[in-house]
Length: 439
Image (cartoon, rainbow, N blue to C red; front, side, top):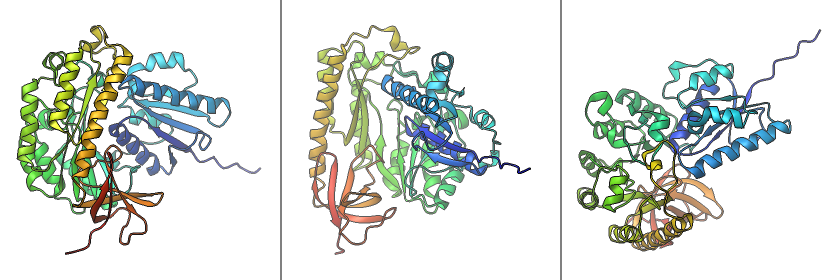
């Protein structure tokens, strides 16, 4: 009798939502690879019989994308391409019971802290010793480093504390070890992420430790750029600005969502900062770190946002001239404090305001980019696209910010490497350049 060999497990992972979710997916992929499982990332559903979808449950659009992706996997299962579907992440954490009832074709739903359980369900052993090791899905020279989980902030519109729980900082030693591992596999750029970087260390060390962490990671050989994402404006730890100013490895870039400028809305949003304090902070950031780039985000259409309040926001954006800005329309999230308010701004007004604010920001971005023409910048190149090498300056975060395009016919450009580029022309969200000649 001929014994049939057991078919090797092949798993297709789909990651939705933010970079913090992506890190969770990469950790799962690392665990799977350590068990000699064939791992695929974001492939068509007919490529593997087992699919794991890491979902987002932050805002309505993200939730809808997650549900649509699950339903596409269900279709593939009905067509015989997929045998097992597992769903993890924020949407699953928040709506597990409802999802079980609505989409019974899914074979298992898991929360945001269920990694060992997911692995057990897949018949795979959890390897504790792999702490910090993961499969990088970003370009091999760039990676995210999640320094904390959860959030202690009580912003009225945000469901993250409901989903992810309280802030839990990771020890400095653990993070520097992970940074060293990333450097050992070729990573040159680390983007620090958390729900709020500025809170780092308060739970673990009883004091803010972001400045110390930045210094420690900058000591890791091979890491050349360290960038800060998701900082909270109220109580901003100004000591990190001195590190940013003086340490050439720390990118002069701060991602700091202000959400609004109107005092009544800031109070309702529970942002713990006033309009005047916000404007003072913007000035302080720029004074302490000359040339710093500020990325921010705003919510339009929050309950009670009058036409006058929106005009105040526009005036603030025009005056502050942020390097980058994202604009989101308000959506009510059940369980949050803001969900108790009347959602009184019509959807068409929200969309109109978002378009108006983004048009203003696009004009500012175009003017700031024009000011870069004729200047030289250190650029890290990510990929080739069409006729161009595509890279970024230190004030450009992956996927969301400006890109620098250099024709492939230009010599000396290598993907994953730095080059000094002279900017020759610009558009609203792109810069064009050539390799700089040495003087």
